[in-house]
Image (cartoon, rainbow, N blue to C red; front, side):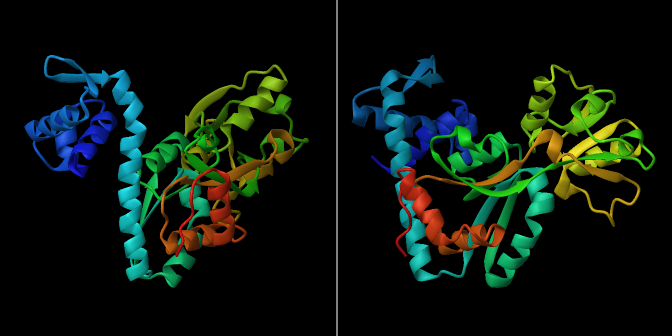
Length: 313
């Protein structure tokens, strides 16, 4: 049994059982991947995959049973390498951050600037995606730290920690009638709306507010990015609903913002890490730069409370 065999199994599942994609991901040949899997199956004494001819189509029951063990072994090996790097050189390496578009655009720049000053030799990789994609990048090991508002709480394998609270803002052109009266769901329901896609940046709270009043919002356009939403508001397509942090009085002089906290309530940005992932010391430093109350002691305790383990160095 060797790590290449275990990686072949893991990548086969990640690549939806497409061995061509597995071979590309592992920088090897398709026959080589097939051989690695077969040799592991022979050593274990049972088949890991269901087959149709030479194609893999799914996991067998025994395969599903041992998959968490395989993933645990590979994670442990990665943690061991990381521990060695941390002990040998705490000031150099790579840190991968996964965040939603709004977090990457508006919430992260200050933290990134502070982190780069403290760790100039650490290469930061910033990945953007939906909240679900952020979670999946953490689960696959493609990201060390994830930042989003939605979805992260739904994964048992993640340690999720609350950070900033924020509200939405309604964005309109100067002179819009919504500027003249107190904001309400009923008033908003009278206008075409432009806001985030479902599952992004507090959209759940927006949907809930309308549902509680038995109203259906007239959403004419949805997007992942607040700048896109503001662009179409400025073109006159509708009323925008964005995270309040996305509105800047100086930059957005052609628009006006109305605080919508009383209508849609508070939202909370969350930081997540993989429960049993060994983090380099500078990963904790980045989390603290993003949200100072989350110092290393707090994050390590959250890992323990979740049933994982913190680093020891």
